[in-house]
Image (cartoon, rainbow, N blue to C red):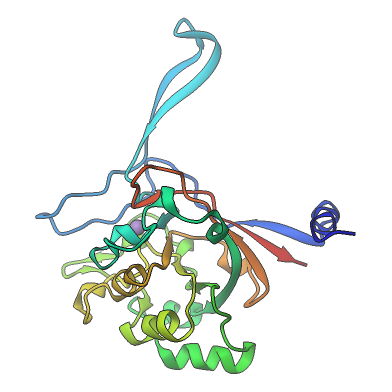
Length: 257
Ligand code: MN
């Protein structure tokens, strides 16, 4: 039996399951809000072209529009100034082999339940590795916070001083990128950085460090509580937008039961 025929059998018998890590795109799903002096990300919009009616008697279809960074979405290196000169840094240029790969999950849900500004630190990563082994090079690393179970205003969690949501410290993301050489980093929140990530040095350290090193980001993920800490396979191909800095996408994980 070949590896792929074994996988096909495992999928049909349910020994390998497909977990959907994607939120549904709809106009109500929150998008990041920047300070008012900056340009803003557009929410998802859908306009009906026809629905089996005089505009098209036998067919239904819609026009859609949104920001590249709306809903569950992929960040390419060219999204950030640190990655502007990275080779193959736009979504259409990424090697397709990078869009399927191993994933590990660091569970920060208890901490995030206590503290909206919960930080993923090097200490947490090293403690995780004590239990599960060293994070393999070229893996996706996902930060589970259960933040995806929030909705409405609680998702962005805007206060007078801006949004409050969990994320990695500069040292944590440097450890993952520079020492572990991960492929990318994903979160359940609206960005790979903490809501208050502007106050770190550098500001927005996950964006700065990941994309400067040619690594990728995933945001607005869900169902991370259905993934094991190690051993799952992530399928995350963004749309092939010419010079695109990111894109909404369907993120799937293959999980061995
Ligand atoms: Mn983004």
